[in-house]
Amino acid sequence: MTDPNIPLFIEARDYLVSTIEEKANIYLSGMWDPLSRFILIRETYKVINRELHDKFPDLPKEYLPQCKIRVDEESLSLEIGIQVYLNQDPKTIFLGNIDTAGVNYDLYYRESWDPNFKYVFIARYGHDPISVLKGSKTPAAEYMMGIQSPLSIAYHLALEEGIMV
Image 1 (spheres, rainbow, N blue to C red):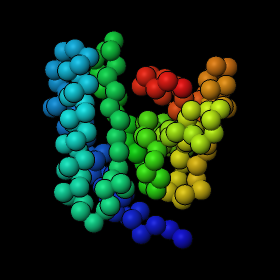
Image 2 (cartoon, helix red, strand yellow):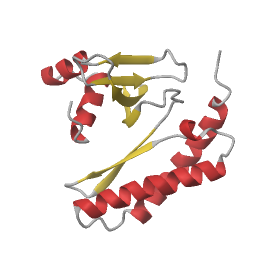
Image 3 (tube, rainbow, N blue to C red):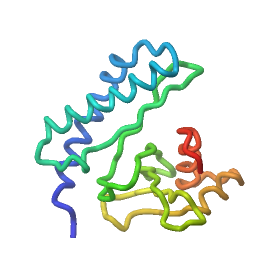
Image 4 (cartoon, rainbow, N blue to C red):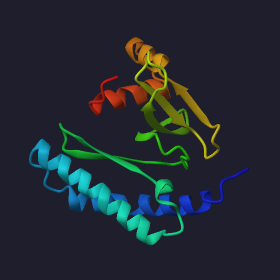
């Protein structure tokens, strides 16, 4: 059974894709220091979420498309990842989006229920709730061995975010 929110999510996502670069360039044009950059990025997320909620009021807030903005320190350029698929799990935190072998993956993490592993990493590759890859120990092992999989990339992004994994 497909979620009736998918068409509205796709419309909101397409709107975000068409407007995010302009917003990011305007709001993040002068990134002076790490604290200013952190505050500007956080406030940019708030502006984006408010606009999406106002423009798409029929889409539940937890289903609004998410984005992740990163600053490449060397070139001072922006990397913007936008959620491609509807995520129905509100406990997950969006890390970014990758395209591997022609397949888009939305990358997430959430706290694990297993006391042996602090986080579970998730790679979503479709709107269907079962279109996911999950792992906690395997992503770390793949990352340490240099294997490029969606879950190892999610682990890498979590490390870049400063999440203690």
